[in-house]
Length: 168
Ligand code: SF4
Ligand code: SF4
Ligand code: SF4
Image (cartoon, rainbow, N blue to C red; front, top):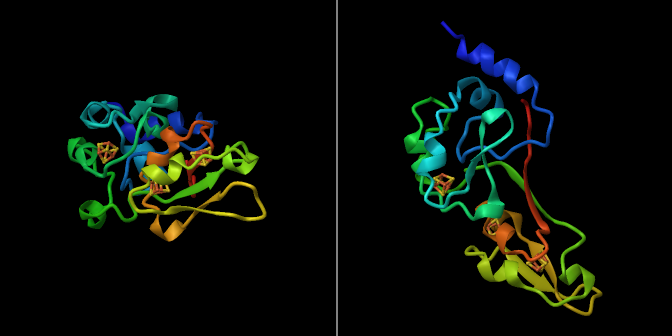
């Protein structure tokens, strides 16, 4: 019989690229890699179509394809015990991601743009003049749900969401 956890452990050891964003409410990277069977159910269940097959065949979220609505369809489609139970009723703590705006942002380069603010439902992004000719974007981390809506809308792909911890 194939030892799934052992097989996935060795597969995970081969992953060398930047940390992937897994599904919302996943317990942690180690549990995910050990327990995911790569059945693909979560990929087809996501109505936003933002889950893709990543390195090593494991699912990952790609916010360049769209935003997470926290609908929980991916969690419900998964037969493995990979998710935090208490979080299932809320969009809070769906992920533990860092969010940042890179230097190629149009506003940072004195070109007017506020597209990211317009798409942010929780109004976590605001604009202020900071020794600049056009208002500069600022993200209030406590209001950011990590939904990723601002990622695909940005004409420069300047907004990055990355996992805070990686223990693959
Ligand atoms: S919670 Fe819904 S929108 Fe978000 S990744 Fe899962 S299936 Fe897709
Ligand atoms: S949408 Fe992108 S380019 Fe425009 S202000 Fe926001 S981060 Fe900058
Ligand atoms: S990821 Fe955060 S800043 Fe971006 S749209 Fe969602 S809530 Fe707003």
